[in-house]
Image (cartoon, rainbow over all chains, first blue to last red; front, side, top):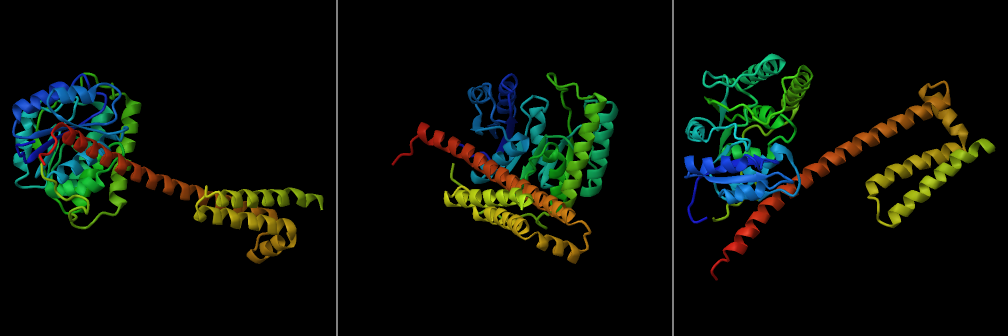
Length: 250
Length: 118
């Protein structure tokens, strides 16, 4: 901890011992200037151990909080230790560490940068009802934020200090809330958002979520997340530093 | 007289259980007050059925027992909503504690590994 990195890569991981090691290794090789924090979200396997041996700092949660809860913990950690930017990278290896720097570069002009599929780059394809759901979400959120977004459910994002302060307290914890509703919060609190086209690998160990019934459930929950984000109250313009978030020297 | 035994007994049991839970500090006042009021009303209607009839007439309900059922459902609904609210709040609080705990664990681990030079 003698070197003082300004960027924290947050990797929320739940039962990902098979892939988290590779992800951490790749991150440390490709973006050595950033610290890597794996948030072990109450995994029962050796996710934390694998991440630690790969050279990451590991924040172990006592039980499973979901991606949203894990990210909140990560943002709190980042603020407390004075990082200027945080990048969320999934532990399943679908996000390419090579894109992290491009996301960070986007923070010069906006508070949140999304690594987006379907933006002209890459080979990631989704078909059928699930695709319609994703397109619908992307359009709705483009309207809300006033920026063309093609991939509202991407978990590949970079945040600056302003966005981290907001997210450390208000990052949604419901399923899909962490992606969809988080963007609404950004829009409603007058933070700015932009996207950077990226490629993503298909989930190798993924569930076959293209089944029509699951897609319908997915759409329903997405609409719920959207509706909740629209009716909930948010602070009108960012928020000040959290009372407990005095920066601790590293 | 027989038809009053059941409501009287239930009112008495509710009151006693509530008072006992309060006495042993197992129940916060805000919940106990509600149940005490409810059992108070049950006891009142059991002792003086005329009050229920008079009340129904006053609010325009023809069959007194319907007023009883209606208020019972309403009270239960409010209690359910109140409990959902409390659970959500508690979940928020425990999640915050879990996040904090994770951060502190990492801090403690750092301190153990590299004791600060004094």
